[in-house]
Amino acid sequence: MTTPSLAIRVISLTDSTERRAAVAKNLSAATFDWAFHDAHRPGDDSALIPDPEGQKRLFGRTLTPGETACYMSHVAAIETFQAMPELDWLLVMEDDVWIDPDFPYAELAGALDARDIGYIRLFAREWKRGLPQFRFGERQILYLTSDPYGAQGYLIRRDRARAFRARLTHIQRPIDDELGRFWENGLGNHILFPFPLIERHMPSTLNSAREDAKAGTILAAPARLRARLGDFVAKRAYLAARRMPFTRNRIRARKR
Image (cartoon, rainbow, N blue to C red; front, side, top):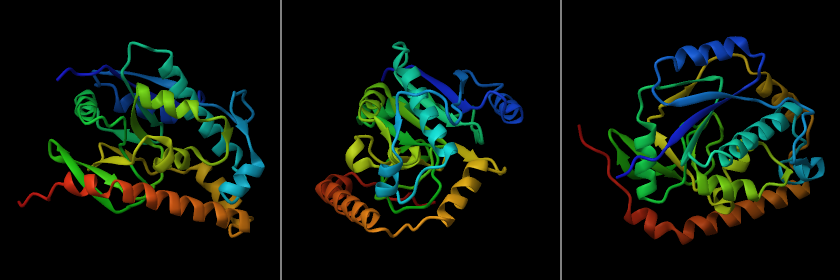
């Protein structure tokens, strides 16, 4: 099996000196290509169009400036990847995580290629029911039946990145929600477990602003309820159509 080419890009604000120092220390002994990707700030130029009305209709509230900038940052990282034809895969991570520098990410990408899996999360915020599909060493590749949230770290292949970027024109939900719409974006919903990447414990201005925005919003508006019902039906139909392959390929836990 040919090992694909891969690089890591760390999304980080240029003046986040402490976070950048922690990342640089974490990756100081890494043998793979990595670099910082300068994050967007609220108000920066982007080809993406913020859609406040669409956000309220589909997400239940308008996004905070930080959520909008985060969305733009991840999309810009993918666009940079598209401009580097020498790379087969990109590992995108945020600067508030610790990543195992010794994990064989390129070998994992090769194993995913062999099964035509073009996207996998390396971390998730919430536990969701998952179907173990195959093993990578002592770890499992699981297919989750719902979005586990979080965009702290993921691997994405060139073809999946191109298709994902092509469908984005307006910003209508946070980037992790956009990545998690597996029933319509073609990315699938695989995770690697145990995770080779974990979130550091540190204050998050993005999460604080998000909670403030939630507190002042009526999330149960009729348009939002209709959107959620539509997503529920589409997701269940997607999973039902794939139930047999998921069940057939499911692996069993090893006895110790």
